[in-house]
Amino acid sequence: MKRTPGERLADRLWTRYAHLPAATSDYTVRRGVRIPMRDGVGLLADVLLPKGPASGTVLVTSPYGVNTVGSSMTGGLFARRGYRVVLVRCRGTFGSGGTFEPFMREVDDAADIVAWMREQPWFDGRFATHGYSYLGFTQWALLMDPPPELTTAIVACAPYDLVAAVHPGGAFLLSTFLEWSFVTTRQEQPILPRMASILAARGRIRRALAALPLADAAKELLNGKAPWYGEWISRRDLGDPWWEPADLTEALDRVRVPVLLQGGWQDGFLRQTTAAHARLTARGTGVALTIGPWTHAEGGAAGARILLPEALAWLDEHLAGSSTGHRAEPVKVFVTGAGWRNLPAWPPPTVEHTLHPGADRQLTPQPAGPTAVDTFTYDPTDPTPTYGGAFVTQVSPGITAGYVDDSALASRSDVLAFTSDPLATPLEVLGSPVAEMDHRSDNPFADLFVRVSEVDARGRSRNVTDGLVRLGPSTAAGVVRVELEPVAHRFARGSQIRLLVAGGSHPRWERNLGTGDDPATSTKLLPSHRTIHLSNSRLTLPVADPRATGQGPQIRGR
Image 1 (cartoon, rainbow, N blue to C red):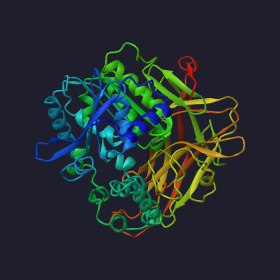
Image 2 (cartoon, rainbow, N blue to C red; image 1 turned 135 degrees about the horizontal axis):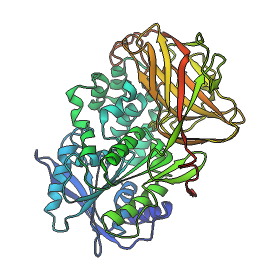
Image 3 (tube, rainbow, N blue to C red; image 1 turned 45 degrees about the horizontal axis):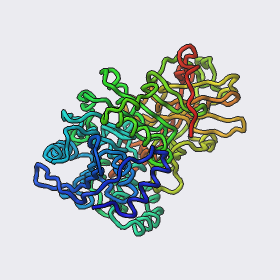
Image 4 (cartoon, helix red, strand yellow; image 1 turned 90 degrees about the vertical axis):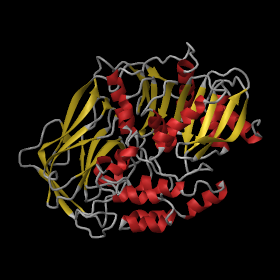
């Protein structure tokens, strides 16, 4: 079938919005093609075939369906530039057979899709994969047993290990996965009723995030339509074999083709993006990395102006065999406060810059005296609220991911805020800061949340990076190490560095009940009274070594 008028319009709009190179081909679409799986289930796919010579095939596997705008972004833009595209709908979604079990069935299904492709008359024996978020996870699933026909993969803002994504630091990532489950249960409704039902549910979502026990709150909100969510919140043993089908970490040791990894500094899957890059680099795999200043949602919107042209250039080089797609350096990052930069490696060479919290709430190069302490109380009945950060949010009222004004945190009694003097010169941090807090709690069931923010000349604070760890009887006392999210940030001259220490960030993470009981089933809450021994606490920042990276080439942002 020919492209519909809507598809033609969407293709033109994406070309203009993302500053894509001129199209070279029209294409036709074979809709609803059935792909047989080994268990008898059939997945549906649309196959986009260029009118004229093709440079190879791009495989995209998604649970999000075949709407005109999404199909153009994931398929049409490639088909218009000479690539065949296979857009597969995950099992149990948008007409594909079977039951949707998020992240659990993708390894076998990926292998069966490739087996089907081999039998098609249009297949020339070479293909690449591409996709964002869940569409990146399906690529890692394929890479658990990489087929010989695969030439490259482009994985954007995606996890490879579900349990690490759902329980980062050991605590459940509440708002991200409750919201995702809610929206996913409505994704096959027509667009206007879907949008209306989601907007109408914002108040119910807010109440569900605040309610206990978590299982009952979810049942009321989801109305039994997302059974996977109950498994995610109730399986607290993160070594439970139930999680194994969704742990694709071994794919990082099996990849044999060049991989382009794309991410955002405020994306909830940033740690897995940079960890994948480190593992592939250590193995000598041809890997490149691009990280922009985006949240998860922004990476698919404003970030598309960087990520989509880059993906096309990568395909031209690694699938079509063009000699014009080479990157200047394997790593391209946006240094917030400075701009785009090409680097030979991530992280680049750095030197440690250590700061210490002081008894006067200062952050200084010198440690506090041996008896200096500071205290706060975490009360789960009034949990420390979320202000921004690297997570995924879609519909929750009053909670925003990414960079925000977090000044209000410093004025809360359940937060310790240590602030440096104004910087005499800019300070550029490249890598993962580490906070080591000599911590005591009268209640061993506690979380420790640490954030670094920048305070501008007007006194307004803005988050830079953070992290959380869940503690217990064997870990709540002593030096607690919190590795913060990777960052590329330049603190401006005259600004101040702020270190924030708290007992949580809700509803980004679930609150710690303070009892050791399962939050999925319990409502009992107990506070925790914390003491930080300042003399043995520190913040270590990886600061750019000017001899190696300080004069790196700048790339003008769009």
